[in-house]
Image (cartoon, rainbow, N blue to C red; front, side, top):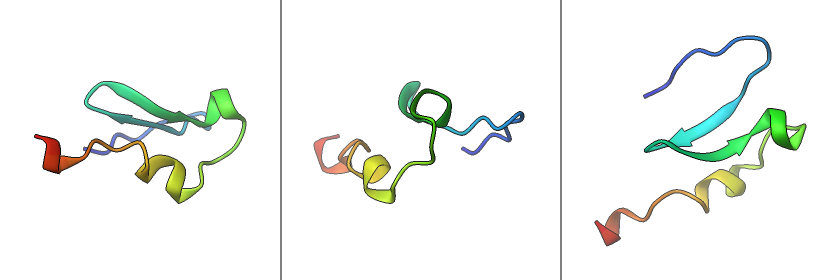
Length: 44
């Protein structure tokens, strides 16, 4: 689910786990930084 943020917030959160925060890193993520941290559906 996507949620609209505000004030320049860009966080990637999956199942309550923060995968990337623009605020903490000071930049937008590279695609691989997010994809590599996604849970593997084959392990479900």
